[in-house]
Every structure is written in structure tokens, then in C-alpha cells.
Length: 218
Image (cartoon, rainbow, N blue to C red; front, side, top):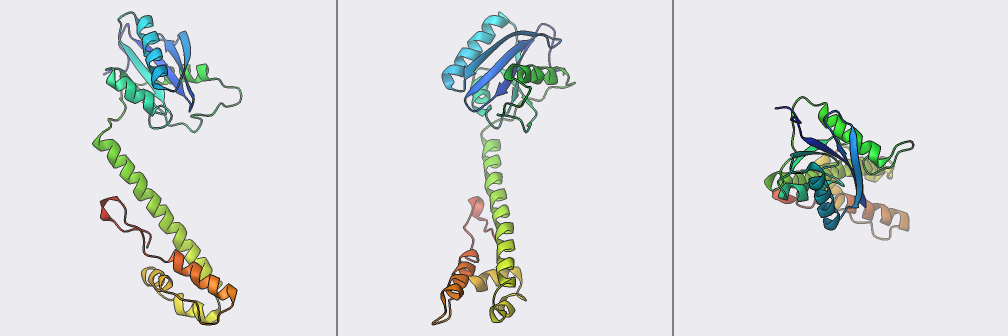
């Protein structure tokens, strides 16, 4: 299936945190009209009304940047209105006004990118798929935290006093974390030694439990 059929219009949308800029383009990517609206439900309604008036009953395909970022609200709204929305690149400039560029130019570029595609790829549906995406974000955050904690713990142990270092450095990662979690500063220890033991204990604390019941960190 081609992305755009004869007679259809393409609406390229450059999304930002506060405003969205849309450009209606013809089949060859020629800009016909442009409009900027607030990134609010009222703005989405105004934008759709403007596009429908310009299309005069014809079918429209939306090419939206940032469909899982600044453009997510617009995409959800358009989906409820039976509009065809196509995701256009997750580019690093989304939400940033680059030197020498403008929102209308980026909107036209989004439309042209869609027109150049041999097949149509619509945006992902919400519901279970979006729930899975959120769970993966949570999991990835836990993995990143685990790696950071391991690196910090290793660094602290390397620079610890010889006795404590020898007590911990040969342990496996799991046993090292558990051993640190149960550390208590020696009686009468100076402030530096006491803070060191407290820090190791906090970093080695048992991980929080994430969605799905999976324990992370170590």
C-alpha cells in the first residue's frame, strides 16, 4: 500500500512542548498552507478543523514528528477522530529550534519524508502496547541504576581502608552488595570511617521491587 493515494493531502507537523506547527502539502510536497496552534486540546481541535476545511471532504494523511514525545497528545486526539497518523523519525532536534531552521520548514520536511516512503506505517496503538512500553522504561531505568550502583560500589571499595577492602573485594557482586548492606561502623570510629560504612550500606541496600515483581539492582 502506498503512503498517499491520488487526491490526498499530507499534513506535516513539527511538534514542540508549547506549540505545534502544521503545513498542508500536496502530493509532490508543495506547501499549500501552514498554521501554528497551542499544544492543547483546544489547539488540536482548531488544527483538525482547519485541515478538514482545507481538504474539503478529501482524505488526509498526517505526518507527525515526536509521536511518542511532544506529539503524543496530538496523535491520541487524531486517532479518536479517525485520522490516519504516520510517525516521522524520532529525530534529536524534536522540540528544539535549530539555527537556520524553522518550524514550518520542519513540518514540510516531515510531509516530504512521508511522501518518499514506499509503504505506510501508522503510529503504534495505545492500550496494552503503551503499558508494555512504560514497563520497559521502568525496567531499563532499574538496569541503568544497577550498573551505576555497581560502579560506585566498586570504586568505594577500591579506595577503602585495607581491612575493609580485603573483606569485600573478593566477593561476588551479589554477596558484596549484601555484605555492604549489613555494614555497621566500628564502635568509636572517626567521622570519615563512619560515613564510609553508611555510604556502602546505603548503596548495597536490597533493590526495590519493580512492576511484574522483578527485583533489580544487584
